[in-house]
Amino acid sequence: MANADAIGSSPSYGTRTDPQTRERRARLRKQLLLWFAVGLAIAVVCYLGVRYFAQPNLISTDDAYVNASVAQVTPEIDGIISKIAVHDTQYVRQGQLLVSLNPEDARLDVEAAKAAYEDALRRVQQDIANVNAAKANVMAKEANFEQSRINYQRRADILKTGAVSDEDVSTFRNVYNTAKYDLSIAQQQLEAQKAMVKDLDIDTNPSILAAKATLGRAELKLRRTEIRAPVDGIVAQTRVQIGQQIATGASLMSIVPSEHVFVDANFKENQLQTIRVGQPVTLTSDLYGAGVVFHGRVDGVGGGTGAAFAVIPAQNATGNWIKVVQRVPVRIGLYPDELRRHPLRVGVSMSVDVMVDHGSRAASANAAWTGPDLRTATTGSY
Image 1 (cartoon, rainbow, N blue to C red):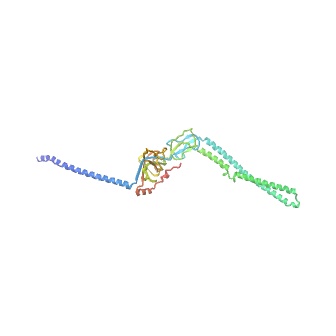
Image 2 (tube, rainbow, N blue to C red):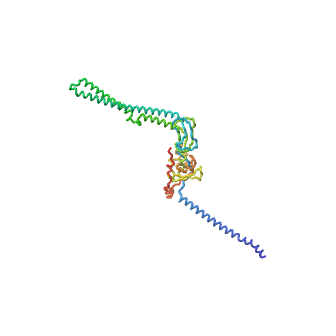
């Protein structure tokens, strides 16, 4: 009976303790929420502090696109296309054959120039032989003149003795004068022949130089029938067909130097206050996603907004003017080794974060930069 009373009284004991349990649980819940809020506040403060004091400020934009100094392939002579060795999207090396023009006319010009050069060489060699002959003639005339002078002088000296007549002296005087004139004529002829060959130097002879220049120009024209790639890159915008007649300067195709591209990031005008040349930049591309991060440096800030250089610039001196925030292009150079691993295409969208100076920490970090000079690394000579 006692057990029955004990069993019957147990529900009343449980009913008395339920409010206490709920009160303890409520207090515990409040304490946990309080500690969670305090921890969250501390974490937020720590994150903001680290973000503010330990990292430089970031200025970002997604209005950025890949650009490059695209090489235009143009012929330097007129001609008819006989071969096209590449196609769009093909990667080519500098000096690789792109297009061939019909070389027959240029080859004939080379043959004619070679013949003219050989003819000029023979004529100069003949002039040199004439100089040598003129020298020999002068030597002969000098010997004749000297003999005539001696004969005349000897008879003039003994004229008073009566050993010779006046007629003999007059005859030898005429021979002497004739030999003197002949020597003068031979000397003038020698000078004229020397002037033709300019001190017997074939390499500096004007006729040889002119013929050599004509031959070199013809050979250059023949080489120009093979149009080769000016830079390494990807072929784009091919506009030629076999058999097409092209003129000098016509655009045949473009070559995009994939390892020497840069990014033009268009920042709002109120974002340019702290952007400086040389600041480090991180970039991501829609082509590869956020998993591939590119690095670079600010190369320069544009000299004007895009609207200022538009074909039809905005006319703001009107009564219905509305202020619009303008954007200024900022040139960003990229690392060539990163571009080799992950090539970018011209026109691809980029997201840009510029780490601008913030206090002494960011300034000293920027001054301690040891990376390459990207303004030099991203410039192509083509």
